[in-house]
Amino acid sequence: IGFFGERIAALERGGIARERLILDPGMGFFLGRDPQLSLAVLRNLECLRRFGLPLCVSPSRTSFIGATLAAGGAPRPPGERGPGTRAAAMAAC
Image (cartoon, rainbow, N blue to C red; front, side, top):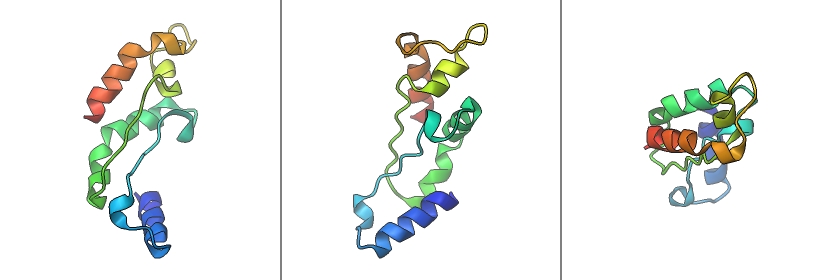
């Protein structure tokens, strides 16, 4: 929340109109190697609504899905992450 508040304020001070902004909370390695961080973002997307901006959530075959679906400690390869991608997209909706 603090990160986005600061970024939005800086962009507006720089002359970017608020209606041109979209929030993308990031998924996977953007947040870190721990898949729990991305899962926490998905669980708490509603908190970002306070900014009154559209949200862009794109979990498509990201690393956190591969790690979450890991079998025997090995992350699932991108080609096997479709069901996890659909589940994450539905959670975002």
